[in-house]
Length: 578
View 1 (spheres, helix red, strand yellow):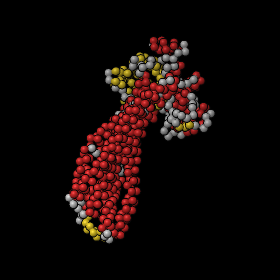
View 2: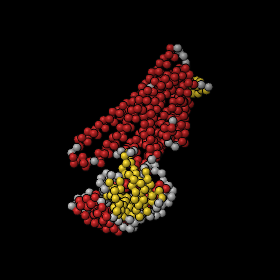
View 3: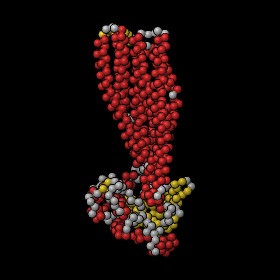
View 4: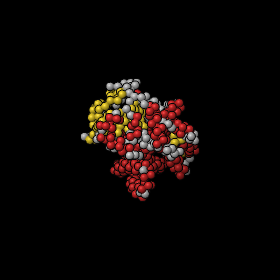
């Protein structure tokens, strides 16, 4: 029931209006069918008036008046189709938009650990196809409400005309609905499998898009196509079975109802029971009711088939929201000191990536972070940025545990430049602002600090030039410097750079070094580096190995006393990065 209410959204007044309109439309349709049957019977008998009883009502009118009233009722029913069409469309679109907004909002609030663990393409699939399929449940739910109420109205009218015939058909129709229930359950299971297959397909396509360059270079397009073909074939089979059941069940239901109606009337005819006009009206009403019964069966099946999609969307929302990091309310006005006290972290229990890390960094200090691949440098960076929370130990800022500070103060004072530059499909200025309300002066200042301003001025539309995926190409070094400008635009107090020179040519690297020297002492800098030249400006350097802080000292002292650093320096002199 909770899922059904969700499919109808918060549009209670729309649902109520739809219910009222459906009942009124059903009453009008019943009146039209009964009037047509009575008028037809009178015309066959050569009568000029209709004299009959409909339940407690006695009718004695001329055929001309009967037909005029019936025509008027038909016009009213025609006008009712407008709200009966608009209301479901509104409910469906509101429900779909709410599911998309709520799901994306939950994603943005989720912890970084949860976001990082999501499979490729899953969010896009969830917000597009899965939500769309779930919203089709709203189509089915509104159709179910309308068809159930109209069906009930027609059956009620048929009972007034001939209780025996109508009751018999109604009982058999209900039994038929129960008999077909296992097929409804089977359709729901097939829909659940199709939902999962859609997620797998999206993940495969997303990965194929990201690795398109490698696929082309290695000439493995055929193997890649075969993999996607397997996913397509899996979806095709499940989609065929869900579509088959979705059409077979309601069609079987309607056909059997027709058989029941004909058989019932044959029995009444054999018993010579009932007035001819009343029986004709009952026939029309029950045949029409059979059509609405088919709609009820189809809508009910449609609702059941969308439940797996609804459950997946809502389950993902709950999963995201359950991971929302706890944030404090304490203000962070200025970062004077950073410290780790015996900090440890493990992605998998009992397999630590970082173990008992202890250090402190003063305001304005420039700190390098080096170590072999897999040593834990990336995890250390994520802990520094507050993207992950340590399993053991304490992370202190100004001698206060970080979890006590408000998230808005924290993000205002920390910035990050990833190793792989990531740009939006937007203007240069929008890429530097990155959804923050920064004026052009702040954008230009950051671009100058990142030594990209002069390059931007040479582009076709300056800061309004469109860049990013599938847009005007900019070099890897230019992308990196735009990302550095993005990090500097809001004037952070702590700046973390993950191998900032990885995509830079020697000239760009030299420009960046000048920029970093200009920032020295103005911000607290953490620089993860593989090039030894990047560490020349550092006050101290951390050496991380096997998840432990092996050393933390000045460059000169490390050259003398740390074997890893000394070896890395010798490799760098030979032109090799480490």
